[in-house]
Image (cartoon, rainbow, N blue to C red; front, side, top):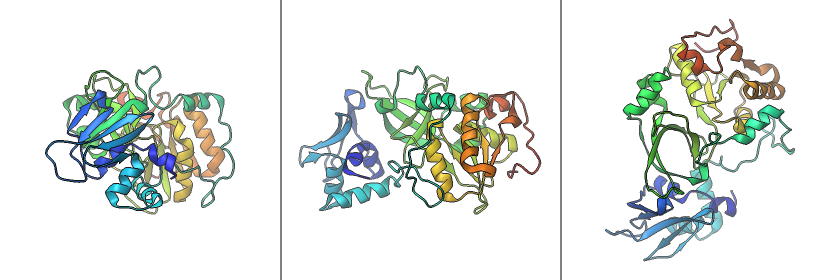
Length: 338
């Protein structure tokens, strides 16, 4: 992580991870006020502001500056290098990693051009087409255990029961700092390995709006049996829970990767190579982008890939199949899960 990358990080998220939560929000969430992290006080004098595409901070009883300045002040560091190391550890090193080549080797080439319709989908992510929101306008407010009748009702309609949802999802509260009102929104979602949150809005009960807070990355759920060398890959979080429901289990034997968007292909590829998986089970959508993505997996990983999309055809995805009462039949010997 370099200094420019560090300065682009979400300062409210860093403060939250350090145990500080805002006591007041103004300017549509673009300015958050805190009791100072540097002293005891009853009235907040420390605030963060989103200006010029980055977060800065000011403290009436202290100094101010960028994300790096805050870390150096808070952690009593004397060098920028120490602050960058601290931030890299906090965000697990995944926010700004370059793509990785075959196992253990850094890629020295630009990723090859993807098929046209897959590339169209690749470029349209993240977020939902036509949405008035963009990820850069959304600010994380809180992450809580999933307790929402509206969300449970929505998920029930998608065939996902409450207990399974509570195991994998959190209740996410967020604001759109470009909206004139300070109205908070809520969603269900799960954390990705970059420290961000992949969300599906539930404020209007439709669940149509999908986005990411802080950063977009893949989500990984460990399997219940370590060292199997198998991983299952899904486009979305509901596809994953749909398969669990169809199989009558709460966790797969092998690991699961949720791409969260086809634009995360290179990140998924890198993670698979880093972990050294020897088998890849794909459950991507039965449409042109999904199947062209599946072909890219085959081109990169060859015989290690098993594409199961035909098992739930003619339905577009696993959740469509689940809601239709369809029970996919996986080929004998080609599906290592229960």
